Length: 371
Image (cartoon, rainbow, N blue to C red; front, top):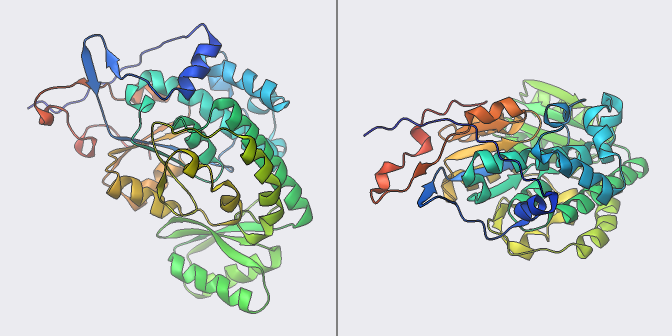
């Protein structure tokens, strides 16, 4: 049996922007071409969060079919999104509200093209996003519309920026230490009055601590004493994913209540519990996500081991999530799409057959890992 896979780059331009927004939000998309139903990989679409942004990250996508979504986002948010994506410098993009809005919108622009290049992306098995990326996942799953996604991300970024001014803090990556030992280090600092927590559980050997600057520094020292290989400071002004973000969570509630949550066509694995959620249930964790840890390693295992995904497609700037996936579930294929040239690595779907074995599993396919 020939188990080789073909690669192609279809290019489809929808002249009607409203129709494309409807496509992004559609819950009933047929995966058929001509008379042959197309089958493909069991995809998990994953989206990075704040910290992935880079100056000029929108330039490769400017003028392409999905770029009108950046212009639409500017109308909905009242912010100059195009400026953020094309010309904003590093300091401007470091600001929480700017970073979140720019990253989310770019992910939507890229998603528009991925859905044409890879039909299975219109009906993924599951979606997930790291922190901010969860809102891109909700749109990709059909649970919220594009406009509501822009409104929620705008409100979230503004609320978190305000909270940072009230409760300043910082974050640091701990490498080479188990999550249990990182929590032990943080708990020891809290026992002595410090305010620091484990904010991201990214992989078996990578966690992020977050809290007041002095407490984070003491936690880093304790982690090194327990055997951490390296500590990397994150240049942020807030203690994200900790109780210090409670004012932001409270402020975000009103925006979440105004959004329309739909049944959707795929579940979203939530950061707060690493479990798949559908419809309105998927939208209930927004406030808790702001103050609670991102359980990313567990989320990846849920997608691979329980939902049987055989390819992770990271959509957005950078390739952090596919790098983490390689460490957590190395048996699953990975693809990163952050620039138009990477669309050529998208595998073509194969026509369905009465013989189930005619469609090869991507666990053993020739798709090259992007991470």
